[in-house]
Image 1 (tube, rainbow, N blue to C red):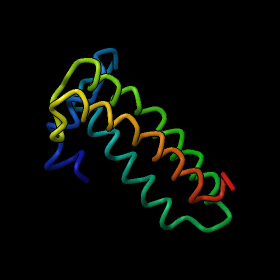
Image 2 (spheres, rainbow, N blue to C red):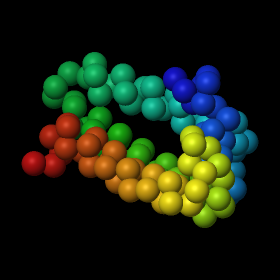
Image 3 (cartoon, rainbow, N blue to C red):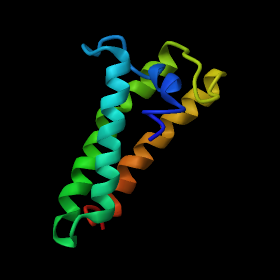
Length: 108
């Protein structure tokens, strides 16, 4: 929900320059996808959880270039002003990918 409301400006800092869509549209679409994926992870029947987990892990992997872009271009957002904080943020995205895969039974 934060993509669509109060943190929208911060998410704009993560959109890489090479994305062919308008920056604001990219933030809105990615927010909608995250809401859909989060809902699917909660409400999908057990027999489809693994597939939803794979899609969520793929999505978290696909948006990782945004975190890299924020670090490389030194864009301040989310209170990540010094380079060290932006670098540490990079370590959390692989954790999200792992969590999405592990929590849905894709990794034992």
